[in-house]
Image (tube, rainbow, N blue to C red; front, side, top):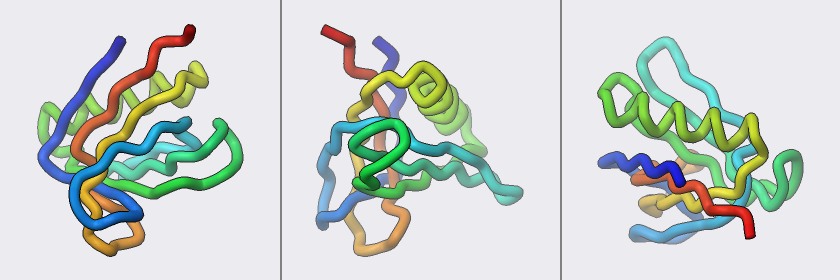
Length: 99
């Protein structure tokens, strides 16, 4: 189980909440932000887009968790802070063990 947390978040709703799914994409930009897309499967069914600050150590840990989960097709639980934006702030990413 890999867990990473952060101080920002993302979601369809207002307030902090968790969505379960698969990381469809994860990337960084030149300004130190990381972005992800969470879906119902590794390739389809977009649930939510999120972003967080990758310039800090905890942001790099979350980026590593997201890349690992996407690469291995592992289901995750992503905690978003709903704020009405297209890319919601991400507070945490946790892998969900296969059963």
